[in-house]
Length: 235
Ligand code: MN
Image 1 (cartoon, rainbow, N blue to C red):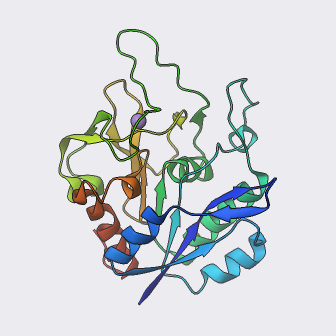
Image 2: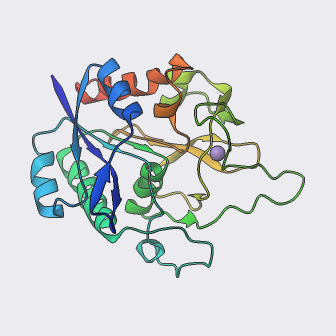
């Protein structure tokens, strides 16, 4: 049994944490056991708990505080959560110290990039003929835009190289990529949709596979390559 620490949403005003069922189901399908760690748990206790885990999944959520990547907040910045930032950045550092795999989804991919020294686009302005909408309406599992998966990447080992249709629920994106990470996928407007590193094992995707796998089962492959990494298999 492989235990996976899973971070989650946190509502400061209601003092309540929550996680979408899609993450839990996808991890179970990949024979992984999720252990959800709420941001109300201190960074110190969260990091101690990670010592018992085989992997870390950074789930989707609010914007990362721009001060984390050396910028002032732009007027379009969304809701921030200091507690969650503190917990997740401590967890990522500890995961690298422990050498356990990290899978980041949406905000999670952005947290990974910032933790390693990259920056974010604070708000996507989808203007001009090449502009693409990245905040879709309608069903959250529906494919909304294409990405191009680069051949030879870990992402390509899961989804195949070339054009893949994904959902899109983000108003921010990776800007300057962190040293050590490579771009594994881009949208037609040039936005980064996938980042990764083989050693230490890091996978980040800008879309939400946990919302898609019940209708598009190929997205379970992302959780399956994560599971293999958590079992010590290297790509
Ligand atoms: Mn997108």
